[in-house]
Image 1 (cartoon, rainbow, N blue to C red):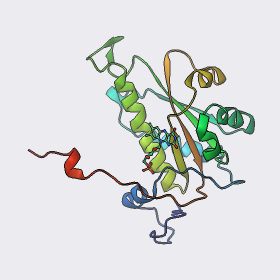
Image 2: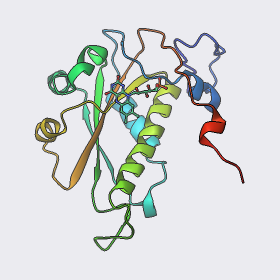
Image 3: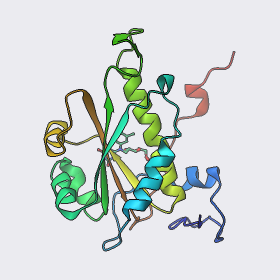
Image 4: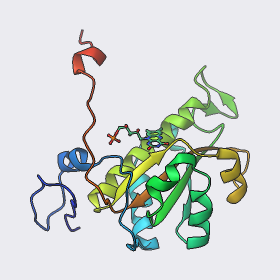
Length: 193
Ligand SMILES: Cc1cc2nc3c(=O)[nH]c(=O)nc-3n(C[C@H](O)[C@H](O)[C@H](O)COP(=O)(O)O)c2cc1C
């Protein structure tokens, strides 16, 4: 796999795979994409297959994906993501994510604890983390969007009520260099005992 850390000033220009630390350092939420560049269905398949390596509750793998890669569907999704539309208008692929409810955290249809379907959301977030990191490793950029019209997306892709519609993820090539956001001091969020 070619190292395609585009937009990464610090990355070595070599043809080797990026290290995990390089992927972490250069993966950012991108809110402007290069126009006219495409991503193939085969590349999206490679990405989603990689995300299937994510752990999930009892390996039930509740995450599902609706990939808008054709222009008609892509434009339809653009109209359902509110103020995100201008940010991702040039992203060639928009991926609507969902998870099948009553699977993660459930045993024979009964929740095993008070967390309920939050375990499904947990699994979906984990799978999406793999997705955006793999995307970066492949030289792509992403924006996870929680600002979206879930009801209309459900209609657009005929997503059954048995699934919870989660984020839309834009996939493309960065047209701007993002700033690395500040992160909370580790000692504010960690306690060692
Ligand atoms: C669940 C979730 C929902 C998000 N929704 C949006 C969104 O609707 N629009 C947007 O521009 N960014 C959205 N973001 C991106 C975050 O703002 C971004 O991840 C955060 O500011 C940290 O920046 P970074 O991703 O560059 O590290 C979302 C991120 C997550 C994880």
